[in-house]
Image 1: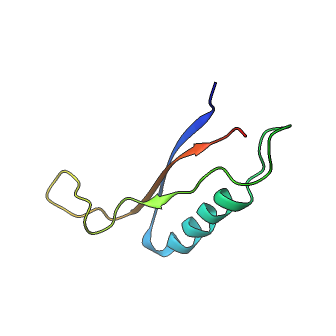
Image 2 (image 1 turned 120 degrees about the vertical axis):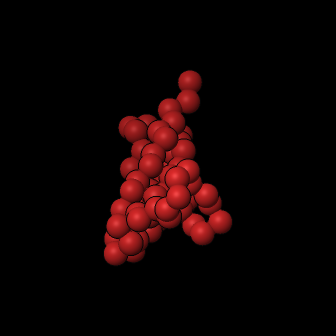
Length: 73
């Protein structure tokens, strides 16, 4: 059985560097469950880029990052 976490992170534009650092930590350093191989579980990527459209008549006022992370070895 696979352990997957679907993650969405919403931040203000001023926190984009923190979201990117968190994504890098997940991808490289995040500890795994006991007995599983070391290393990261995947990363988050921005989904609010200019080419992604949302419903409504306005542009989003936040930065949203998302990823499906593999929590097992």
